[in-house]
Length: 182
Image 1 (tube, helix red, strand yellow):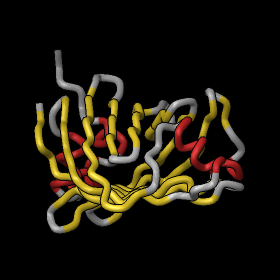
Image 2: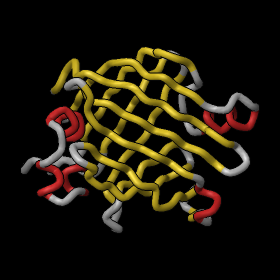
Image 3: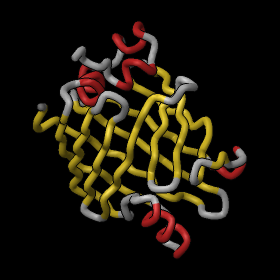
């Protein structure tokens, strides 16, 4: 059975993929199972509606310098990302959509991202959101700023999600180092 091209490499132009930092390429393409660990600072509103929505979407709770472990399972049609923070577990499924965008499913929500290279990093630009398969008006989607890059040779991530009437749902940034590749 031929090897399936890595998900992120199929969603970026080949020339852009080759210009990404080696740590970014490794995290998004190496092996069929990858395990990584690091640290993350997590922020977000603390009112009840934000806490309940984070729980529904399996997003982590705020806290500084949280230990994080990530397991990425690569399958022919999708990737399963399991992120374990000290204050929560986040599970999502990523796949290529027919629209050429990255679709990330978190519980009942699917986010649609256009991926772009920004220098040697990947910028994820939110294009739309579906709740239980129903597209939401763009005004209700809020903003999701997301970047996968490198600093001091380590893979880094920086995500900030804000919603109307909620405020900052979750923001987390930090670093990961690959511990095991299978």
